[in-house]
Image 1 (cartoon, rainbow, N blue to C red):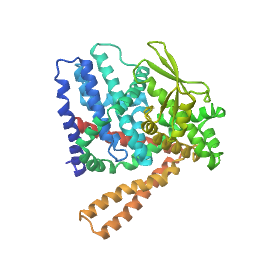
Image 2: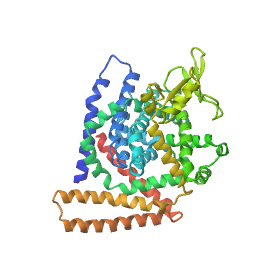
Image 3: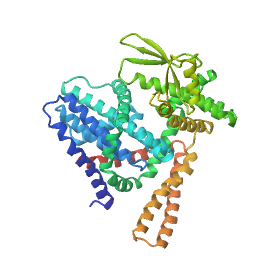
Image 4: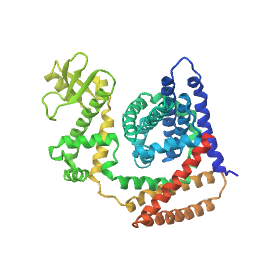
Length: 469
């Protein structure tokens, strides 16, 4: 007999499934559009839904919520191409991709949880495009798999899957940014259910999920666990100092630590300007038109920062970029280069009536400042116990919040509320300490890690199978 949490979980997923089913007939039953168009629209619907669901503020709920939706998407894409698959096959197709892609599925969903837990500001900024892009890439790979199967062609090789993943995820992140308004409308359709039932859905698994996040960070090492935006800042730091061209993260951290506090604002300003250039070039080269951009080899190229090229006409020209809040800096360059082209960050563009690069100076400043601070405090080879002071209050916080809700509803008295908090705190501390001790012992730590991840995968699979029913 299902318990109360299982019933609430099923209602939560049924609401999402019903919403998808209401929109799918407009795609599936169309005879006037080809299968590739049906596939594209189906992938977009599921990607937007996943991104909308993932906006919920509950850390780590995504790992349980998104994977079943992706498996459901697999059945719909297979149907479009006339390929017959059952629930188990659809689930295996999605989870098998995780084995090939590696960082693509479980680790990235854990990273999303990390955004919401440790750096919530970035969670709000990056969740929509990241989740849309991740699901979009998964959908594109699944679609290619079923298309090939329908035509009796060879299966995708692991290398082909990785290449498609890399390309489609990048394309999907851009689409996610372009479709934010639509995604937010998806979110609004089940926001209330998402926040209330999603909390119940994740509370019993928060310890395992956070430990997996920590193990993932330690296993990969800080050098290989940066987001694309953070990697751009690392590249900018290296470009700002020739001595750092081949530097490791530890070397960069030591160099940044050597700066006086009074020199940090100037350093951040310089790095921010280079990040602005990198991001402008990336946006310009991925917008689908025939105009491309590249940086000069030297950071101190006189007058201009970026080389532009029109592939259709062969025209070449230079432009200057400014990431600043000071109009005087911009005006000074304009006075010295009256015939030159300049593009600036959003805020100054609006004030001075100039062309914007589409990048916010405020956002750039926050991101670079935060990352430089993190690098200054960086510690090499983090250990599992370094994360205990972070994980313990988060774990207890979930229990306290649930008890507080019960107290507000009159289900428990104030004395029971206090007693249960003390009891839960002790139990949580004992549980986490026991797991951390096991993870600190060679050989035993491997067995413990496998057991934890097996429990996580099994619970996720059970949820997925219920959702697919």
